[in-house]
Length: 171
Image (cartoon, rainbow, N blue to C red; front, side):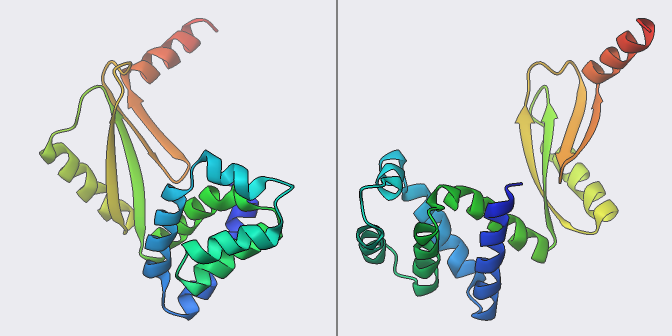
C-alpha cells in the first residue's frame, strides 16, 4: 500500500461519501485514469508548464466538480503521479464498505464453474463477505491451488509441498 495514495484516497472517499457520490466518483475516476497515458503524465509533471495551465487543461477535461478539485490538489502538491495508486486505494475502500473481498486463485488450469461456485460459497461463509473470484492460470503449478486475498496466501499446491519437503530433507 502506498501511504500517500491512501491518504488522498481517504480524503476523496470521505468527501464523496458526504455528498453521496461514491459510485459516480469511482466510475469517473476510472475513466480519467484509463484516459491518462504516458504523454499526459509527462505534461502534468513537466516543471516548465505552470500549474495554472495544467489546471486549465484538467478543468476542460473533467466535468465532476469534486473530482476536478481533487486532481487540482494533486497538481498543486506535485503528486499527480499518485493518481493511479489513489484509484486502487479508493477501490479498496469501496470494497471494504460494501463487504466485498477480491480473491485471486492460482491453478494450473481454469477452474470449472462448479469449482469456482463452491470456492466462493466456502469463502463467503468463512469470511462473511461477498467474494469476487479471479482465477489465474499458472502453468508452473503442478497441482492444487494457491489462494491470495488481503495480503494472505494459502498455498496448497504440490509445488509448495515439494519445496517444503526438499527444505526439510536438506536440513
